[in-house]
Length: 315
Length: 247
Ligand SMILES: Nc1ncnc2c1ncn2[C@@H]1O[C@H](COP(=O)(O)OP(=O)(O)OP(=O)(O)O)[C@@H](O)[C@H]1O
Ligand SMILES: [Mg+2]
Image (cartoon, rainbow over all chains, first blue to last red; front, side, top):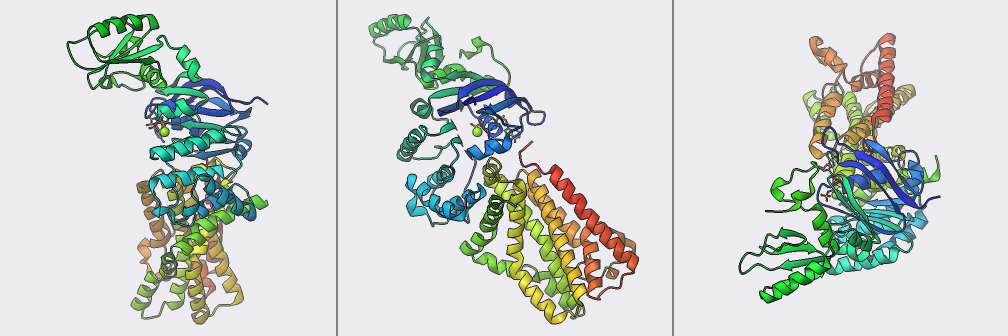
C-alpha cells in the first residue's frame, strides 16, 4: 500500500461557476502535518470536502493511501475524521453528549465511547466544561470541543479546516502543541490563514490560488524554489525610492517590499545605510512566499482569470 | 442489523430526542401540547360531534409532523451545524442516520401519542381489526413523512429553503387533507384537491376503520393501493435522490 495522498487532475465546478478546483494534481505523504494555504475562496474547503468523501468532484480522481475517494468510500470513512470549517456544536447538547454520540455514530460500543469521552476532553483541557450545555460555551471552547470530538475517534487521518480560527494566542499555542504531538501517530491535513502556524507545524505546505495548486513542498523546498532568497522592507519616509533590484511591491502603509537575491540585497543595504533609511532585511519567510505567489492588485482582482507574471507589480 | 448500525440509530435518538428533552425540558411540554391546537378547535366548532374523528386526526397529524420536524432538524444538522458533514465522512450509514432521526421524531411524539392513545381508548370504540388497520396506516404515514423529510433535507442548503419546503409540505399533507373531519365536509366541486394529499387516503382508511366513514370495498381497496404505492414510490425516490455525499 502506498502511503500517499494523491490527486490527479481533480476539478470541481459548482453549477456554471468558474471552477473552484481546477485540474489539481499533486501527491504527498500521509504522515505528519500537511498545511494547505490560500486566500478566501481559493478552494481549500472544496478540496478537503472532496478528499473527505463529503463532496463529489466534477472530474479527476483522488486517493488516500491507495483508497480511491469515490470507489473505496467506506474504507476511507473508517480511517478519517473531519472537523469542517463551519462546524458548530449542536447547541442543546453538552460536550460530553456531543462526543459520546459522535463515537456511537462511529460504531463504538457504549462503554468504550463513554470512557473515551473523558480522555478526549482532558487532552484539550476541557474537563471542566464536560456537562455545560454547548450554547453557553465561548467560541474558542466550542471550537476545541469540536477538535476533541474528532480526536476521540481512532481515525489516524484527520482533516481539520481552519482549526485555530478564533482561538486566543495562548490556546492556539496549546493546540499547536497537541497537533505536534499528534502528528507522530496521525496524518493531519489542515488549512489555515495563519502563515506562522503552517511555518511552525507543517512538514509540507501547499498553496492554492483560484483553484490551482501553485506550489507544494517543505518550507525549505518552497524557499529553494523561489527566485529570490531575501526579503527587505523599507519604511515610508524621505524621498521616493525606486530600487532597481528584484521585485518591488508597495505596501498600504507606504512601505516598500522588495524580494531580491543575496548579492543585490547586500548592495541595496549599503545604499540604504548611506541614505540613512530605515529598513529591515531577513531571509524569505513563508509569508513572503505566500505574498509573492498570490499577491496582485486588489482592483484587478478578477478571480479565476489566470494572471501574467508582470501583473504582480503594483503601480 | 449490525451492532454498529444500532449504535448509530441510538446516537440519533439521543441527540435529537432524549438529550434534547433532558437538557431542555420545555420541549417535553411542547411535544405534549403539539397536536391539541386543531383538536380543540374542531371539537369546539363541531360541538363535540367530531370527537373520535379528530382524535384520530390528531394522531395522523402527529405522524406527519414527525416527518416535518425531522426535516427541520436534519436541515439544522446539515446546514447550520455542519454536523452531517462530520457524519458523512465517518462510517455512519445514511440509512441508519435517517432511521435514527426518524425514531427520534417518533420519540418526540411519544408524549402526544400517549395522551391521544389514552383519549382514543376512552372515546373511540373500534374493533381489533379496526385498531390494527389504524396502526398500520399510522406506520405508513410515518414512514412516508420520514422518507420525504430526509430527502428534502438533503436538498436544502439553508434555513430559508428549508422553511419553504416545510410550508409546502404542511399544506399538501395536513391542510388540504380532511384529517380532522370527514371528506364529505369538503364541497364536492373542490373535493378532488384533497386527493392530491396522501394523507387523505390515510385518513379515509382510518375513519372507515373506526366507523366514522362508510367506504365501499372498492374505494377502500383503492385507498390502500394509492397509499402504499405513494409510499413505495416516495421511498424509491428518496433512496435514489437523497444525496449523502454532496453532488
Ligand atoms: N456550495 C457551493 N456552491 C457554489 N459555490 C461554492 C460552494 N462552495 C464553495 N463555492 C465557491 O467555490 C470557491 C472555493 O470555495 P472554498 O470554500 O473551497 O474556498 P476556501 O479556500 O475554503 O475559502 P476560505 O478561506 O474563505 O474558507 C469559492 O469561489 C466559493 O464561492
Ligand atoms: Mg474554507
